[in-house]
Image (cartoon, rainbow, N blue to C red):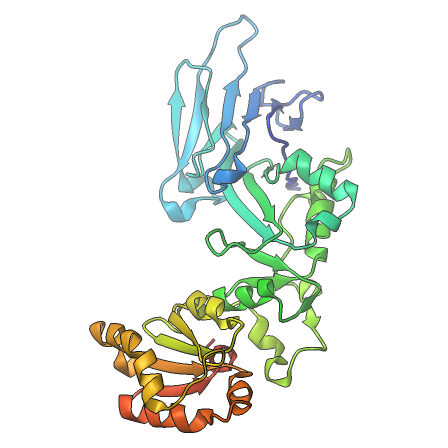
Length: 379
């Protein structure tokens, strides 16, 4: 019978791992064509400030018994779509005479052929998590992540495949360094979750992190088998999907709208919006640009509007910029909650002023619900 065994192992940073047939090897291949000790995989340090650049991963060849350095065979995918393939025919094999090894961590799916029936490749992937309560996780979680990630690094290996992946995290959402997933106990109207919706990023339960850590530990068990082979937890799994926060308004109570859709990052592409707000800036000043729009805003409550002409004068420079870019048809005047009430207390009727101004300028007016309305209707 055929027996195929695949077990993925997570590697710590700044360590080396021996490969071969010997029982003492860190990663053992049960093939009589493999030497007791073929060589080592040396894992370099990873710079979390430059997380998209893989850490160095080097193959170091073991000398022969007589001390000489023989040849070794590298394998490289024939085309980019073959990276990670388990089919040997998808790779070119090149025999290297002399030399003590080579670097594998170049993100090209390069690998080593140890024998005709035993080979592996190295493929870099990256996972970046945002979790505002990371500091509240227990010491065991932090210690496991420090060992393998700093704040992130790991890779997996099997009889035929090495896949190494960096895992990084942040407690705050950075729009210039966006995460792959946001961890949250519920779908809620927080800055992190709202940004995730705008950018089309998945929101997962914190249990995703716990499952990730459990898998980091499991693959190095002495009796690890295919069930313990390291793979990332399935982010699409129902078990990791949050429930809706009961405090959400009815307009945001459709769970489907909280699921990731990368098209949302371009919903307002080409649109220019002027926000009419009160003393406190509107949250949409963050979310409209996140969805591709050009956004400006004007406090019309602290210094209340007097008339439609007053509003025209205040937005004249913005209208000029809109016209300079030929976007009058894609211009919106957006008024936010509290503005109508704030002006009413000062004897000003918002609808009359905005309606008259927009009619004269040929600009459409809408409420601050435009962001979530666009999510429901367009992504």
